[in-house]
Length: 251
Length: 251
DNA sequence: ATCGTTACTGAACGCTTGTACAAAAAATAT
DNA sequence: ATATTTTTTGTACAAGCGTTCAGTAACGAT
Image 1: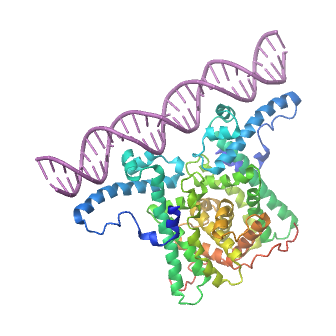
Image 2: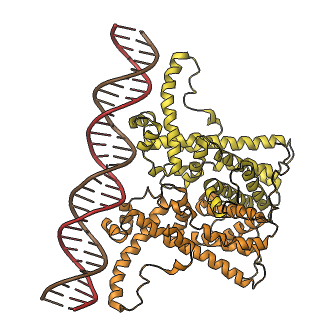
Image 3: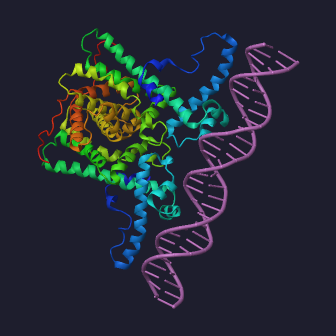
């Protein structure tokens, strides 16, 4: 519950572990913390990579310890349980992602200087950060896939994060409304959903596109990927509003 | 390898276990097989439900045995290993799904009587079967989610099924080409990918839409859902072809 | 130099897992 | 009725799991 709230509010974003100390203790204290933080960082990094490869249950703490080059008991020392490790790894990135998306939206709106934010800009703010992470050589490139897949596993301890960016994604609705006044709120929600689906699938199943297309599609150009999905979604969003029982030819 | 091929060809579709017997042995033989088949069926059904709830590694054979009301050792007797059980469960539905999609495409093409198949019809053939399964009260309603998620877990024994419907999905390409001659093959592959993403996300994350939209979206009408996603994808497919470095206003 | 805190370690715990196997049971064949 | 084959069962096993804990080492504070 508290965990979910942390994702819905912006206030907690910068509230990271250790930020409480105000730089008072100076060097000695800092160096001691540094020693612990190094191990902690290695564990999180390894966990990020391991979890990205499989599911929560398919990864063992021993796997993670080996990858991190750390003794098994150190994980327990720093994180307590496997579940807490998972949550720590997950939350860090989830908060980061939400912050980036909202920041990009705000920036885009600022540039519009009061006039209507172009549809393409709103879509870019929604779809670009995830794809940019995919190309990140660091942990984010791995973890964006975990971020996307985890709500699919009902036995994962983060299944209640199902709604992890629910509230945050609602921020986009007013912008879509202004850009496309003829759409109902129902239309907008459905289409936002479809857009996110196209984006998520591109992130998690990009290898499949390479294979299906026999290498015809260039999947290594980030800007091209973003442009393609944005163009796709923009045209889709401009489809006429949904009408109940649309005239169908035969069946 | 052989398993993957089975999905790519249509010939093996009706080759189900036990079809080899030609009805020669008559009643006695049939009744004996029936006894074994009953247990086998119960196990597969339970496995389907359990696997749908989590991941391959989060489900134990003991869970499945309990759900199926069958002794643990019976699973080993009928399927050998956990992996073989998983493959049996998986393959049955995967083949079924591919067959349905291709059948629908063929039927749609037949109705067009030689003229160009309308874009909307091609998209319907591609997107409708999955959504129809979602509304199936039987095992398919559960398993469609497994079908979609499984390639995402690299530790699942079906990860090599990554490309499970790769070949099969290529059948749609010529139809898109005819309906939209101005698009390159690259454009078509990208957009097919996005369409499947929107559809998959709708199937696996439909609860999220309910939540995000605060219940504004009606997610219980199958025809509405299909129409919405098809309309979305149709408009998106009709977007102008991709151009490298499209003129962007600011950044 | 001593103390106390923090970080780390090795070994062990109890439990669950997938698998194996011999024996029983059931069904069919002779 | 007997023999044979198919199916089911209880039990056991080794391996792996997450977690615990007493003990050690490193460090800053006193």
